[in-house]
Image 1: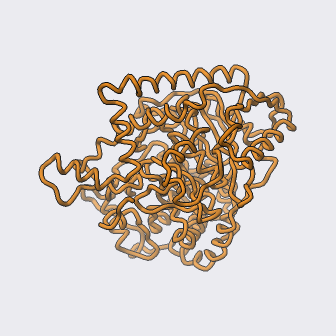
Image 2: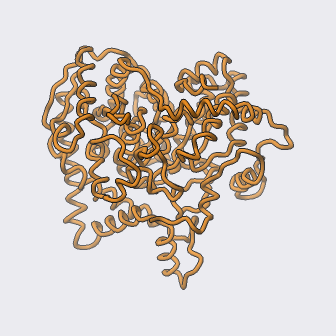
Image 3: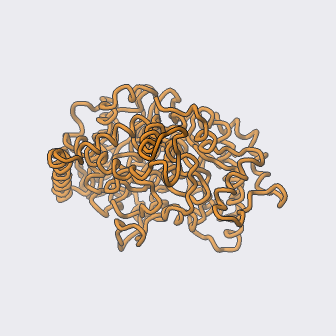
Amino acid sequence: MKRILELTALELGRRIKKKEIGVAEAAGAALAQMRVLEPELNCYVTVDERMVLDQAQKVQQKIDKGELTGPLAGVPAAIKDNLCVEGLPATCSSRILGKFVPSYTAEAVVRLLNGGAVILGKTNMDEFAMGSTTETSAFGATRNPWNPDHVPGGSSGGSCGAVAANECFYALGSDTGGSIRQPSSFCGVTGIKPTYGTVSRYGLIAYGSSLDQIGPVGKNVEDCAAVLEMISSYDSKDSTSICRKDYDFTSALVDDVRGMRIGIPKDYMGTGLDGQVKEAVLKAAEVLEKKGAIVEEFDLSLTEYGIPAYYVIASAEASSNLSRFDGVKYGFRAKEYEGLHNMYKKSRSEGFGAEVKRRIMLGSFVLSSGYYDAYYLKALKTKALIKQAFDQAFERYDVILGPTAPSTAPRLGQSLCDPLKMYLGDIYTVSVNLAGLPAMSVPCGQDSQGLPIGVQFIGNCFHEKDIIRAGYAYECSRSYETPELAVRGAEQAEIIYDEIVQQGHLTEENGPAKEPKETGSMKEAVYAAAKRGAGIRLAAFEKAGEQEVRHE
């Protein structure tokens, strides 16, 4: 089993295609690892083992018949909990959504399923993707596999932590201001935020609609490129989706950067950047320079305005997007209230956490009469100027290289004590979202505490191939490192692995839940599965109903 968990997603896909490893074996290995590590890490909020093994059987049958031939067919994956999957809870790690089960599946997930993915479960996140530590979740904080006393980053901390801990082989996350790249840096994995509009946002529960983008998290650049190729497409259901001519991202996986022009912003390497992070990033630049890239420093203006512009725009959009959660249509509703307006107030007050409330209030304020021009309009103008600054930079450079985050992962609780400090931690990532650019974080070393450091590659719009090429060339100079916790977990998981794999051969009598014929059948199927059989964990359902679930 341990040898399965050590494989990358593409390596596993090749072994499954050669019939050296079964799909149920791969899914069983990930589930066994979860059973061992989840009590400590809390990367997932929803996992239904019987449904996973049922999926694995069906995918195996299609592979055997030759119906699924893609490079990732049969490879188990995890999905961030703000992406809808029919039949599984979609909570955004918030109490306000309660036991909501969507009746449809996000387009990006549909494309994974069409390629033969086995969905392991939904991963933990900062509530409504608002946070940088995955500590604002209503279902408890996720811990960093490299050191459980530290955060995994956020808001896609559950997805990145699960990949690092070998609890899945790749995952989907969402990136509004660095929410894929920053936790990838903290967890020592690779994450890509593609150009805005490349991946359909249909089925993604919105935070900041003009900034959100879905992207992959994997053990290396190869896996991320393959997943990105799988989920990218034009989608008429998403009005911001863009029809591109070239989705062949894996063709950029060549160890050749000769002649590539790489710029390092001086603004990124100054005050506020941890010395060990700076050293690791500059060493990564040296590696690329030795391979033939032209590396030089330059001035990228307006960097200091990225954070205020981002939080004004993102909070304004969030205040609008989250207005739909009112206790009327679906999700949580306060038990005691007097009249309609009081029900709105109580449901939202009890259902939303402190960070979400803070951003809703900020967004409502900047959009209010008398302040719109002073704050929101000015932020939009700043956003346009930031995009112009990047456009000028890309006239001279193919790729911009810098740190993903100013430091390594902080200790649990450290960031929540000072929200402003947490916001400033996004200084190297938010401008990418404001400009709609593609960017990728790749592991580039560790600090003195053994915590991972990430280097960020930023490309021009629709030039994902440039960052993939640069990231892959750098990655070829070093090997992937696995946290010791994941290695120890795999040894313990061996004991329960056989038990889980055998569940992949269930009889009709005690097998996976069948979809009832009544309306709302998928929701009923999930509840039925939760009541039956061993090894079922529906944490989101269990915890959403607990009255003691509260935010500090």
